[in-house]
Image (cartoon, one colour):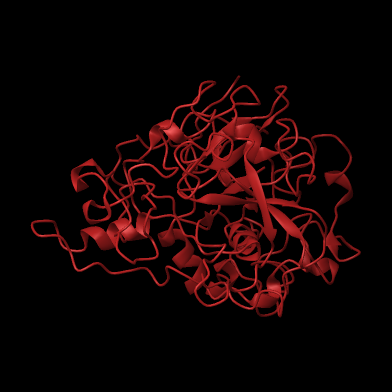
Length: 424
């Protein structure tokens, strides 16, 4: 099994695990040509770098004779929208970017430079903007900060996966970006999914504090909790906005509904199981060591002492975050230096919470219909301490893309579901 932790952007080394400036902030790149202003013209407006397709843009932050020109693969209306001066069937397509050779200013075969599509993980690069990850280290495209590199089963390339479940801090940035609902996947456009706001445990709870603790300590922990109460369409839209993808196939896009537990097919399962070598993310022998239902009760509920609770535990009581642990020691600025539940990660160094805590949506649905059923992976805090199958890498359940709201008094099926993203 060949795995490696990824570097941060540019040519600098990855931040140390205890670096207080470590920040999993997003978005990670712009899709506009990096040479848009190179000729000394006026800088493009701020809307050309807001990760939203708006104004006259033909794709996100490019095209429309206002922002930088679009690289190959991006949407266009006329050839003037494209860096390669070629628009075919609504996409920028330049002949030298599809000739299976490295020519022009390409940094690897048919990728990199100012015209061709960005290079995927492991391809050669000369600068960060050559890479889909916006991270070039030692002349190879690597994972951005906050993601780790997972080798595909069989050793055929690699991809990036978020090291932790998407947090409330990260999701709040998506909410405040006001991404148009009409920019969703075709199967999610309103009225199928008419809001990105989680339908529970939102907005982020402000805790009154703990005697002797620094101000806003628990508020900071709450930002570090994984977002939950989100549907499949919310997860898909967030990952797209962050210039990533909801984890699906090992090569990108959706994974076939009947292949989600095949290491050579599903990115989530491949990373969790160490390329199919481990039934559980921590090894080949079951241990009740992750947040799958153990130790979650407070003393007044018959549980153990609060001192036995992990740091970052949900506030308890009737709070909708009850039972969920923070992924890290994050603060209201999104920085962190410690990740909790290190032993519950996956078959990749630096990957956490692949089982228990919150279950995770996967880009694996049984049809292309808006009401299709989609996979949910990894079990959750509701799975129970002895539920070995639900908490295994192969464990999964299915739910509609956007489950209807529960009847009064019934539990919400989205209460224990979050997600993470991949990058290819």
